[in-house]
Length: 403
Image (cartoon, rainbow, N blue to C red; front, side, top):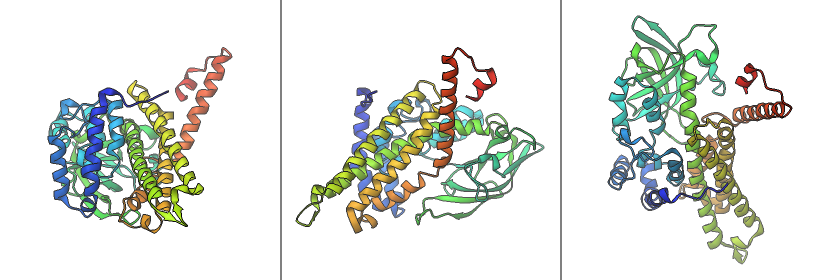
């Protein structure tokens, strides 16, 4: 399969690429230092140039790009960790989730302002004392008391909680004995609700990236704050995380491509032992390995995006690219750091931050080990089913469901 950038999206993709390389990337030192005015200025420029919220539905005030078209744009937007915030797509997963599952009240209150960048959301799933790889162990609970939910528990890695208007909280709402994947719900909690307490911002590999630990101390919200049907927390989470993983993988490609460009430029200009580094065979190996890994990851990611765009859940493809993409990003950035030597370890270049974020990628939205196991199991089930079909044996209905 070939996946050239379609003509219909090439213009906007080129415009986003120019915006990233000419304005966002040069502004990174100020953005990393917390300069809010610089971020607001970039947002205003993006809106004026028609580059704001491109992946959000048009009826919500977004650009309305179809999923697969937005995937191509998301790659170049991902060259910088600030791309999502500067171009208004940081809230895309949350706006799609509310658009599909929220009651009219919450749609009216949050959707349009969120797409416009006037308010921001946050999402709370993982907990400090339980394995994030097995979300059926989550202990945060919500009990219905009259017409109010009472939420008790503790979450962490709630990104953006300090600035968010609300947090969507994954919590147990059903009694013991309920099937684990039907025992949890999602509830919208405005962050100014009594009992919602930010414990701390948790630095990640030395970076304050806006990840917060939050305590829920008998937080009371009305019963209609439930997002979607009761007990459908995992269904909603899967709807949120599946496309989100493709967005991650495309942004990783953008970061890897940027690191690759920096590496190649360094190899052409740095001289050691009487010749450019580009003449060294070991350095050429770094170029070859990085090029092939980026290209392979891009094709796998676009294949998964095409399946999603066709209405398939693409769980095998998404599980595969989550692992392959995260490894690819880490490997490419690591080689770029190596080629730059001591300079690669400093914050004079973006590689230091990129390297730390690359290590995070193998854990968030599910650790590699879980994706490897679940993807391999699905492949084996599908192969087993195909083999039975080839012998004229139709799997029993329950086995088809499991496959």
